[in-house]
Image (cartoon, rainbow, N blue to C red; front, side):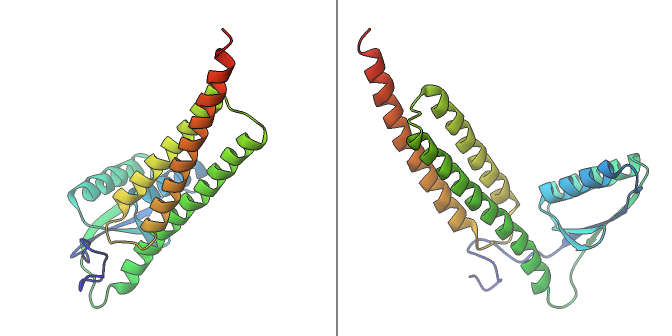
Length: 191
């Protein structure tokens, strides 16, 4: 931990962006769409329809675009830039907890990935098609980790566990690939 309260290289934000909005209740897909976008930005809800994000030029652009989108769908939204008066540790904890939840979900999905590789061994499925399918799944997991890491502005603790889980998946896929190459090579040796 650094004196600023974050992980190495991470600092407490000086400013926060706060988006306060109201959306028509129907259709519900509008609310769900805004919720997904707010989560995708890495913002956290501090109240119903009030989301906070550490201030940055990219965050501001994204929040301004979301504010405009909310207004286009018949809602209203205000975007503020503010500082926290007093101790902002609770806000930082909420922000980091959101990232830790995402890192934990990635680690859980890595467990599912490893079960799928285990299933391939049990079912004796050593084909290029199965290898390609599992490779696509690993690429998705890596991309997801990259997105969460990009939102992890304040040094959440769960990063290392997610990185380690992904490394285990990568090693498992490499071992499976070697087996596929050996099995497929044996099948072609009679040609």
